[in-house]
Image (spheres, one colour):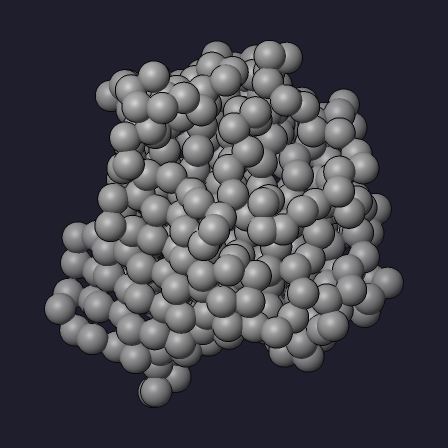
Length: 352
């Protein structure tokens, strides 16, 4: 997702309002009806580099990167970079101030003891934010992600008391999530187009309260777009991206319903990039421990089993207090994996 990924009530944020959407519109309004926008249907033929760029016929999309990093002493860090586009109306992609696209950026840096987060926002059509494909560049203000979006990326952002600049490389293929890029979010038809590059190797520099830190590690890029990715009664999600020690990768998410069972889905990704969809019956995911953060109880330790792949692990947060105190707040931070396999990854949790 990200999970990432999501509009986060973007129109409300840019209007300076912290109101919540009606309860029949899902988390952050992502369950709102969207008949006037393009719809996600199975069978899309992805085209690159075009699909690295914006999709103005759809209501929402995001470019989302997480990185698990270490310094020379073995200290662990996490980095997040996200750019969201949200259309206020169909045919929003107009020049100048007639443009109806709203843009939102989130950046974060996490250590075992501290978490830093920043948000920036802007209007489309006036050069403040956007995405190009020739060459690829996604930017908002002085935050940027540029390269070819598949094998090379250079990423930078800064906020109060933190900054980072990372160089990412891989020779592995992109991964289409779900059913060849068609990622179902409910049994009632909600879905997104979704692909990832989970194989990036990262090197770069962090700045924390003026201190420079050289780091290296792994990174994961997600691209997702839709017009209605949630059902109206889905009020939040838990999204995992995991790098296992043996070279396999795992993406999975749990969408929580106001009533009824959770919706579980994911992808099992082999080291060569071959992937296999995971369905609800394949995934045994349970919260084990909650942390009180920002006046909420948030699950920061989990058990996960994918029995047909012999995976039985516990997943725990590097920093249980990695709360994104932005316009629509959520939890996001690096995690560690222990059990039948070891590994690292990222967890995003919304709606708590």
